[in-house]
Length: 290
Image 1: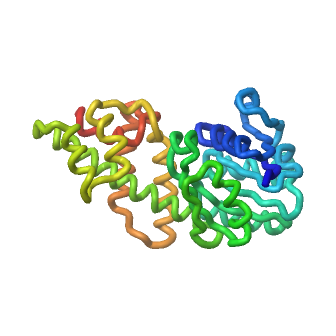
Image 2: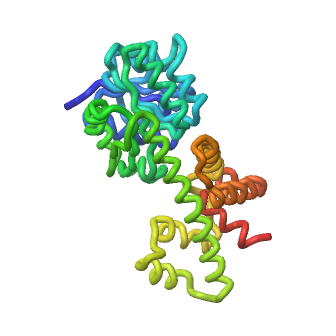
Image 3: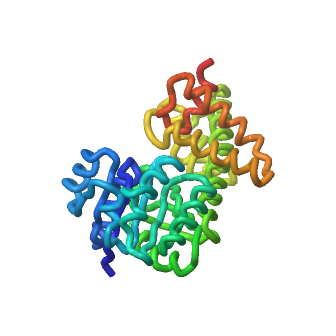
């Protein structure tokens, strides 16, 4: 069934995600901090744009957001021009931002006080996943709210899973990033070793990707790592933001993240080399060039 929805934040992820909602038959109003970006979205997809989050959220059954960080989320939610000010009682807010579990719980509390509902729903799959409608969505919140949102989220997701109460989606995304960080460092070391040993990296990846060492990162990033190409994909700056959230949460819950902390420092070295916008596979750059 067609729903009236709003989408706040039209970055590399939000722009195509909002487009998939419109293609699925929903009535979409968008908001972006830079109005020109919203105008470009309307020109490409149709739909409508609004000058403030509150205006975009007016009369929407579900309001989606995909912004940068905790403070960005607060800025589109709170205050007289924030989405919560425009939403009707009973409406649902779904946050796709990769943020802290703390801000998810904070936002859910404020939403509840206003008679609104809230889901934290960070995504994995990167820009390509957003453009192709094949994101993985990790959700925290009430089951009834999840059941309402999932059929709409499915317009840009290949998997959408309820992980637990509010905050659980963000915690699941932290695990996702922790696993990726260690994996990419291991892949970088393996590929560098292979090149130093004189192996044909194309044949190597074709072989070992079929076994226990295989991964999405190996199949999609090993070839470009061997070529020294990093000017694409999920940026190091974004990964460091995500890993900082993981490390802060680990301080609270007592988890030990020695490899994650080390890889985070390796990414700091990539940034120092001017690679803040390079793909996360640029850990390889530290091994290729001293």
